[in-house]
Length: 289
Image (cartoon, rainbow, N blue to C red; front, side):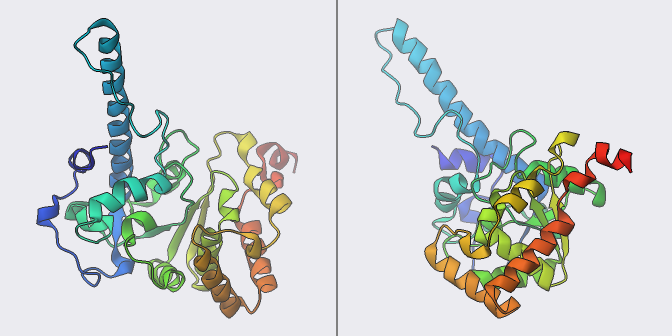
């Protein structure tokens, strides 16, 4: 994969035009245009598709012409989802290795601004694609609230992926500063990830606006995520983190904030009860009232 080609296609600043120190821009201020984030994800997707088109072209030529070498298969699958879990090790870290910076440092200034929305999400969920992706419900839910595109704070762009410090406390401070948190719930997966649970609880204790965005592709989708949550959620203690030490840090922060794991669970259940669509809210049930 040609990292420099992705940088050019997505309009990133050349490395030679960038410099970075962690105190250059406060963590809480590193917002990026939602449209730019979408276009960046599309640029990566387009590059991967081009690699496979080149492979297919050479493969066909190899079958018919003796002087055409056999192509080397691209290192990523044809249907590679553009997820943060894919982007960080394969795209973002290589793009920022020399600077030892967040991706934010290479984004042109016209696409950066003070964030008015903190995005809490899972790294396994695709950013783009059909309606069931991270960016789609954010775009549809917040388009009418802003003149132009909102500036979002999203971890894999705004946080320096070369650093791993007191992240739980950092997230609480960032959420408190922004005051508006979006949870794009495509399915119930965020309720199994401890970072997502911590961020929704941080929004609660900092009196931030909480926006739970459901895809609701049809009326029959409404209440689906809430049903899974009530059926499967047992405790934050059962949720997972990719890095084991993060789990201990976050659970300690939860106990410090709410008094115990049981009390943390109770706060979370109340928040979800208020924020997610329930079966009783389905259109045909409302019509019967």
